[in-house]
Image (cartoon, rainbow, N blue to C red; front, side):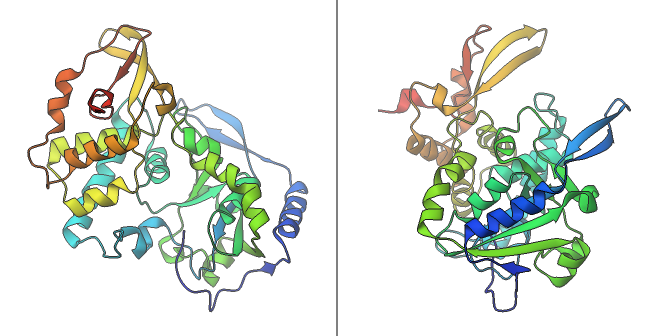
Length: 345
């Protein structure tokens, strides 16, 4: 999502239909092969790696700017339109780096800093990264995902911005990123708006505009739903789990910030199958909500609201851990702060 009123922005080209735009971009893409880059691994070995020559970004609507979620004022708005108070913004300034650092240092995830922020980005927290995809179909699906009758697709030539592009798919836990063939662009501080003339020129970004018809929207609806679905995503519960740990360590959040988080972060379970125990280390395979016999999202939302919000000082999530026990290898183990099936009644 972006913001603004498209009084000044002009695309590089307008098409009569989404079909025409798609045919043009497929033709342009087909003339260019996938690039092969030599990259250095953590061990120092230099290996070849294929990367898409083009990256794409789909948007639905007539927006005058394209900014990262961190730079958009509406990112920090509550459902009633009010902006989060300064005290909550300061809490977010601590919370977001703290979570990213946790994903880096925790060897269960073993993410680098870029991939850690990519995980935060894909599950609802704002960052300075702007999303792109290596799959043109995905870009068109996002361009048709809203209610506006105008869609746009941006095209970025990968090699020209390689030092500023992050491949979010480069990790086994990046379930949503892999579905979306997701990449991220970290623009220079002076080029944070990808629709500005300076950014379009220096980053060599092209914008294409087309109408979105009801049939276009219907055709791509299932694709967009699949790209955003969390119920069968084993990584979807990571943020909710570690947000609960953050509250346990640093204290309850305001009711406003709690509400803001509950409307951004997937209310998913954190559970896994332990394959083996190796001393103090456990080899685990995470599972998704669809693997549970029952999952009541409304109940889980209410429980997280009580755990996180200062409006419920009597409710401490650490008490739920009294019910926790490691299951034998091959069995399912769930965190009792993110799964409350026994309280459904």
